Image (cartoon, rainbow, N blue to C red):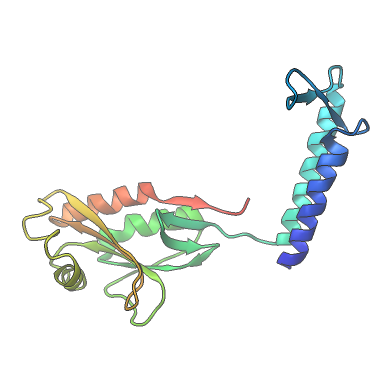
Length: 204
């Protein structure tokens, strides 16, 4: 299916450049040299109806390509950390629901994908994970003690504040993001701010 879509994309590109807007005099919007040697503009006197026809034709071709590709799901990221890939969850959210729900709601709003908050990560699953909570959470404390003992402690972050630490994928674990609050309110603040920093993209 993707192979046919790529062929169609090449055909559409050719049609746009040779029949809709290009250097050929019979294009709907013919380009003529204007000013410098590499500067072209639509020919003066081109009627507004030609612009309308060109827009309609480009829309028609775009819809053809969209049909050939089929449904394209949204992807959601925080930097390089992948939460959703083309409509499929690629991440687990670990933490108490009342703390981490803003993050799950943001993912749902951006992509339509439901990622339920869990108490602990699923073993041996090749997906990223976002941990939201405090050092009172056993899963977070275990990671901090093992991998970031000098960055996060009982004194840092302070109550009401939070810190975010990205742990890249390694031979023994998937990529992880820690959102650690100095207390529950700090963790909630971190989850809300992370939700605002998510980006959604698709192939259109």
